[in-house]
Amino acid sequence: MRSIPVKYENGVFIPLETLREIDEGVTGEVHIQEADKVEAMKSSSFFGLWKDREDISDGISYVRNLRDQHRYEK
Image (cartoon, rainbow, N blue to C red; front, side):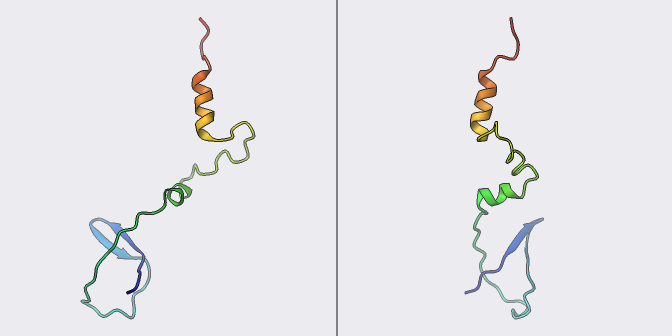
């Protein structure tokens, strides 16, 4: 058995590498293994945006801190 990376696009699985040694018309099975969430996030342009910020240790505590602060004085 061989593993071939594919991309699903417009209802069709497209191989991401050249398949020279496979004969035309051969059938097989596709097993879907979803990408790791961290790997998917790394492809985002926002990944690592705040990595050099010393005042933001992690996103969750940063957002909680913002929510706890009162924005407007009464």
